[in-house]
Length: 138
Image (tube, rainbow, N blue to C red; front, side, top):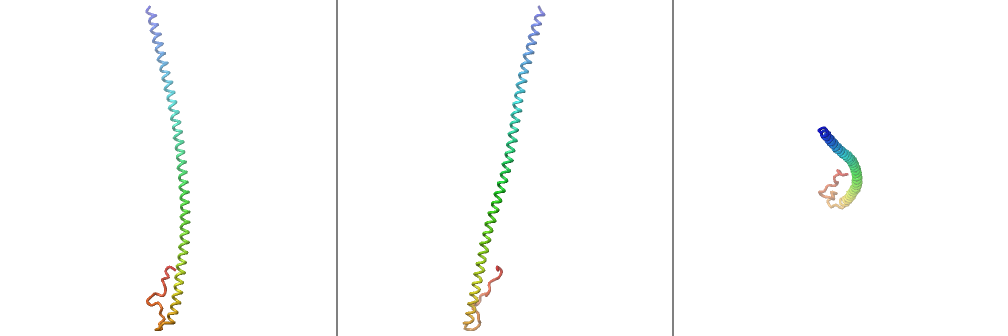
């Protein structure tokens, strides 16, 4: 009688061991599945990170190209404005030179008329004034 009780206890222990092993195997499968999900998530996240980094490098590169293009355009505009300004200054300088020449001619004519009609005969028409402007700008 004692033997069958021990056999039943052994069967119970054996079945309990099998149940524990099954439970452990299910837990191991859950852990492996979760680890695979986590790995897939990390791989996807890494892919997204790499994609975002590549996209950011492209955006930065485009920005540098745009900035260079804007600088070139600004430089071209500045050169155009300065060339136009130079032309205006040259025209103004020419007008000034013509005005000075015209005044020199008038002064010479007035000097000739004054010296011919002078009462004292000294021939001085522009008393106390310089007869020739400075040539530093011409």
